[in-house]
Image (tube, rainbow, N blue to C red; front, top):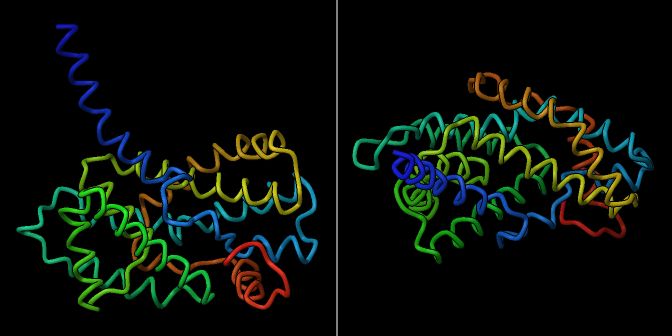
Length: 244
């Protein structure tokens, strides 16, 4: 009996490990090159300390369910329990168009498109771009969809049988971890201070995941004006370390 339980638990680890690879900072899609406006906040001296970085993270997590976290949640929802054979994908095509319209800052929009393209190429190279994710890749190649990273992550999580909350928690953690890693370099701050700031956001991340699981398409697009403005300003910085 114990051996059967061990085999079941080990089998359940497979999707989790594949999802961990997807959100790993070393997964070769270039996510580390994006700051999503954080660099302009630092250049404008809006973020100069650990507490400033925590305030940025708090605000980010407040709007995250209405942006990429919510997008990933809807992609998972539309793809969960569906096979490629009986799935027409109209919801995903509509969601893709909505995301293209709602991302106002050019570099944030093109950054997500590039991450999606590189993500799909990496999965294809590993022969792991099948099912709904493979379908999405084909629609992008046919110009029927633009292709956004958050949609691809949600579809991949659904296709490998990961629970929605787990997919969103991992995706959300990777996003705020990247913000912290960028922040400690830009301000600069110590790595330890950055990890303390990250740890103090865990309850807020859990709440963001709960909110994202309840979003509808009508809830998407709610974004902080400050984040959008700084993301747009970043395009015109004289000297910069990040692409957005």
